[in-house]
Image (cartoon, rainbow, N blue to C red; front, side, top):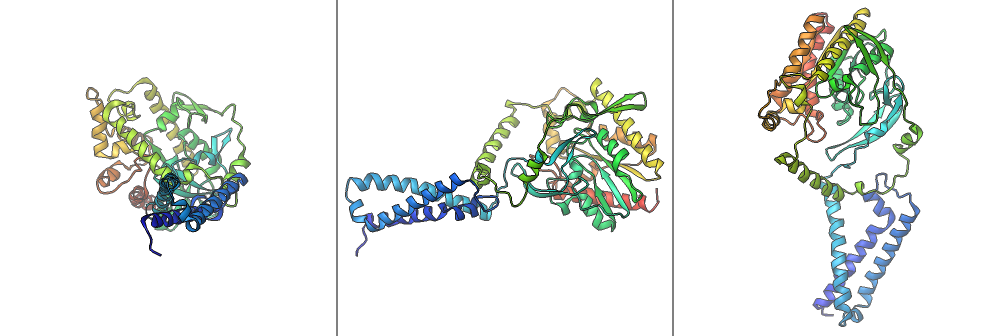
Length: 453
């Protein structure tokens, strides 16, 4: 048989519908587009089987009834419409397959807030014994496991260890377990380094941890990491974490802490439900975020929006504007003095247990990156800022209150032109950033542990 253009077109359409039918089969569809390779919703399976059956039927019709379908005018209307719709669907399938194979784009919907439960003492804490895949707005997708003690670390054993306290820069939930600076230090030092970091925690919560549940007879050293961009906000109590989670507030008079007010009116959270959400055997629904094409389009839209913001049409006021201003306002002047009292209280607790205490200073990505810092200054040409104002202030506290302070800014700033140390959207350390921090900490810790103070 001699194939005319119409015969070729009919066979092409038959092939398209055959492919659609194959990809619409629920097992095949789930393999490519479901998080756990299954489809739990009955109605969705029924719809997919229906689409698959119709597609196979259309494919068969085009093959076996090509003469009838090729007679005008039915062929011109049906075939062109089928060709157009089938080509679009096929292009989407090929595009999705291409992205998944060569340029996988993580889910853009952050879901880390589901890892926390309310706590009357600390405000919130990790849900113990939970494992989850955490998404970070197209930049990373990380497997996170919380131990039975409620921290992102291995099970704590009774052995000599270093305790590291702080917020999300310590927890490091944007990178894999073995990429965090605490794990890198553990490998280099040959001793346990416990990660007590919790997202959103401020100095007051870390002080409570130190009082209540951190120190053991095996604790060899305590490190508290202070993140300059928001820890002073946390001390001031001006903001709740993620706009809904309350934090305890230290009531300070002079140079002493009178009390730490517990959290009131805790929200009700179904912890068992959130635990079940992350169980590996739980049937997860098909969502737009499961599709890499959807994530690509969403990321493109956000990139355009961010560019629109940066061109001056909208100017957000970053924390650095108030924190690093040459003239400190009253809110942060009080926050600075309160933070110093809290650090002094931490030092006193560790001193009473004869344990070395170290404060590390984590700068913001705006401070570290020269281009971002210049861009930041360009938005406020009539104002004066000091890039290392807070670092200098905290080091002065350490000198006067007798505890060592390690400023991470010089090492991060020096390396920032060579490597990407912060995720651009998430604004936390990348694996390269954690590596720089570990390398900077290693000689200091070795010196302190060996008694060379």
